[in-house]
Length: 218
Image (tube, rainbow, N blue to C red; front, side):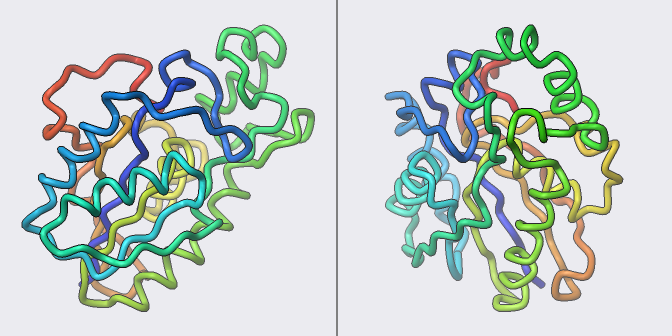
């Protein structure tokens, strides 16, 4: 039995400003985010992780390292480019409201209609593109650790798409479960080496002791 602990990175300046932040952008983490990462590390102290895998983008790899520092038993961290956030092309760094005006169809479909999202005009990745690059990495991890706990630190939109895809959610419905908060944890379990997955916990932020606001969620 493999348990996968999917963690979204800490909150950044662009998150706070409601800007698109994909694989091509990386704003600084907010000061309070470091305390929240450490709170998650303390929350995980009863869990022994066989390994930690992280997106190589700075906001994710710093989150992984900060959490690891607070674990009772530190784990090795590996960086995987397959765990990066969506490549967002021309939307990168732009405020949500500006994209809504400039690319209204891409704005609507990226948020609400994953099956209709066509990023060719903006030079980005589709939902299926992201799922196709992430799933082989997750499958390899589960096969490498068939009886362990593994932490995976990545990004809100990419994790939302991939986790729901692993659970067998159809492409049109990938967004219907709601967003993932910064420094949240979602846990999946596989008993058959990645053929199927069960959802154990979705978007847990109980250890943060704060009320979430819209800028926390993707």
